[in-house]
Image 1 (cartoon, rainbow, N blue to C red):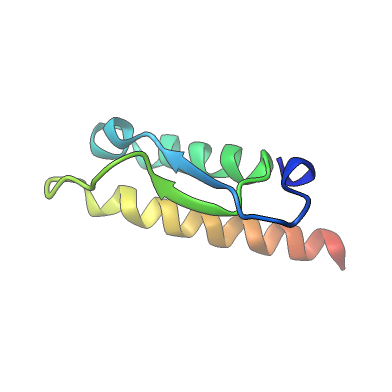
Image 2 (cartoon, rainbow, N blue to C red):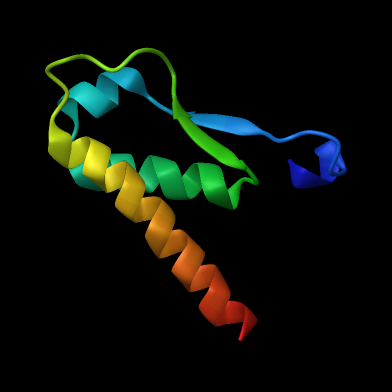
Length: 77
Protein backbone atom coordinates (compact mmCIF):
# COMPACT_ATOMS: atom_id res chain seq x y z
CA UNK A 1 0.00 0.00 0.00
CA UNK A 2 2.84 2.40 0.77
CA UNK A 3 4.04 1.99 -2.78
CA UNK A 4 0.65 3.09 -4.07
CA UNK A 5 0.54 6.21 -1.90
CA UNK A 6 4.10 7.22 -2.86
CA UNK A 7 4.26 9.30 0.33
CA UNK A 8 1.45 11.58 -0.82
CA UNK A 9 -1.03 10.43 1.80
CA UNK A 10 -1.33 8.17 4.85
CA UNK A 11 -3.29 4.94 4.78
CA UNK A 12 -5.74 4.08 7.55
CA UNK A 13 -6.67 0.52 8.35
CA UNK A 14 -9.10 -0.79 10.84
CA UNK A 15 -9.82 -3.41 13.42
CA UNK A 16 -13.21 -5.03 13.03
CA UNK A 17 -15.57 -3.32 15.48
CA UNK A 18 -17.53 -6.50 16.23
CA UNK A 19 -14.29 -8.34 16.96
CA UNK A 20 -13.18 -5.51 19.22
CA UNK A 21 -16.35 -6.07 21.23
CA UNK A 22 -16.47 -9.88 21.23
CA UNK A 23 -13.13 -11.44 20.26
CA UNK A 24 -10.16 -12.34 22.40
CA UNK A 25 -7.22 -9.91 22.61
CA UNK A 26 -5.13 -12.27 20.45
CA UNK A 27 -7.53 -11.75 17.55
CA UNK A 28 -7.27 -7.99 17.91
CA UNK A 29 -3.48 -8.19 18.00
CA UNK A 30 -3.46 -10.30 14.82
CA UNK A 31 -5.67 -7.79 12.99
CA UNK A 32 -3.41 -4.90 14.02
CA UNK A 33 -0.27 -6.72 12.87
CA UNK A 34 -1.90 -7.73 9.57
CA UNK A 35 -2.83 -4.10 8.89
CA UNK A 36 0.65 -2.83 9.73
CA UNK A 37 2.33 -5.51 7.63
CA UNK A 38 0.06 -4.54 4.72
CA UNK A 39 1.44 -0.99 4.88
CA UNK A 40 -1.25 0.74 6.92
CA UNK A 41 0.05 3.88 8.65
CA UNK A 42 -2.82 4.59 11.05
CA UNK A 43 -4.70 1.92 13.00
CA UNK A 44 -8.29 2.80 13.72
CA UNK A 45 -11.66 1.16 14.26
CA UNK A 46 -14.19 0.38 11.58
CA UNK A 47 -16.80 2.35 13.53
CA UNK A 48 -17.51 3.62 17.04
CA UNK A 49 -16.31 1.96 20.23
CA UNK A 50 -19.07 0.36 22.27
CA UNK A 51 -19.21 1.38 25.93
CA UNK A 52 -19.14 -2.36 26.70
CA UNK A 53 -15.94 -2.97 24.75
CA UNK A 54 -13.49 -4.88 26.94
CA UNK A 55 -10.54 -2.76 28.04
CA UNK A 56 -8.33 -5.78 27.37
CA UNK A 57 -9.08 -5.50 23.64
CA UNK A 58 -8.31 -1.79 23.53
CA UNK A 59 -5.09 -2.50 25.39
CA UNK A 60 -4.30 -5.30 22.90
CA UNK A 61 -4.54 -2.78 20.03
CA UNK A 62 -2.09 -0.43 21.68
CA UNK A 63 0.32 -3.15 22.74
CA UNK A 64 0.32 -4.76 19.29
CA UNK A 65 1.36 -1.47 17.71
CA UNK A 66 4.18 -1.12 20.24
CA UNK A 67 5.38 -4.68 19.67
CA UNK A 68 5.37 -4.21 15.91
CA UNK A 69 7.36 -0.97 16.13
CA UNK A 70 9.95 -2.54 18.45
CA UNK A 71 10.30 -5.55 16.17
CA UNK A 72 10.85 -3.35 13.10
CA UNK A 73 13.46 -1.27 14.94
CA UNK A 74 15.35 -4.43 15.96
CA UNK A 75 15.37 -5.64 12.38
CA UNK A 76 16.86 -2.33 11.20
CA UNK A 77 19.68 -2.50 13.77
